[in-house]
Length: 332
Picture 1 (cartoon, rainbow, N blue to C red):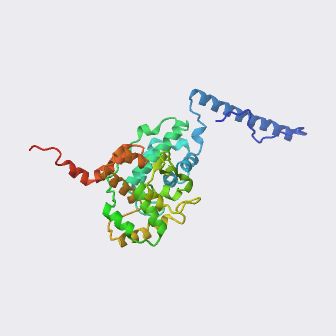
Picture 2: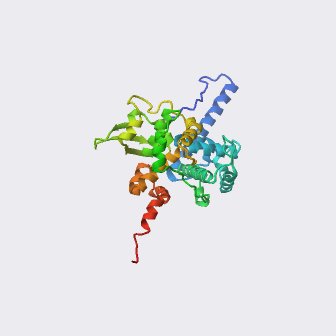
Picture 3: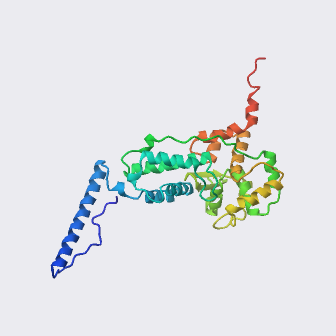
């Protein structure tokens, strides 16, 4: 859809046809070029006046979804892979009907993970379905679909999941416990002090760490998951965990595999028997901040949540804050 003066089709004519065959060839090529010109002009008129270009219905929807997923990140790529498997590797925009989409939602509810062959969680299925609907919306906005199919589709139900976190005492105990991988320990404790996701910590570079106008250090980043731009102040303790300032990646040598068995071993050695994953350190940051009296709006900004309602979940985890409200209203 970029403005251009001419388009080269790669069709050439014989300059001096010498017999009926070469003359017929030129005529056929001219007919094909004229047909393509008519199709291009029709597409321009359709776009200008809001008509549906029916040629787009024949285009590959999977190719469109893959291109969109590559821009958006890992979760969209998982959704694309599931949909490709569901349609057996072939789907045009004309094939995208309400019925097909509803069958895909049913597929997600009973699907298994692509890597581990274990059932897809209910919340994961709901999340994948939501991402798929976002791709449908984009296809509609780009006029590959006549109707916005989302108007006829409903979201999948989710279930409430217990968010595990460390108490202040458990966090101190973990910090005092040696870890086989020092880079893992520093990254985990940084997450507890900042709320950063593992994806953002893996991508963190020294260029992201800078002096803020208030003369304190901060981290400037675009979060991997949501693409949100953020400027997050950090404490001296958090800065210390980053190690000696240098160039490139901050936590060199840190891998996702370290957040599996090595992390579990370190947590157990600290005498903590909860089911703690790396993402629980983000929960720890949120719950301890709210328990300490930080307002939920500030916590939401630090977690780079787009909606404060998402942060509200952590407020419900802090039982001490609930307990404090009990005696605030008295009859005697």
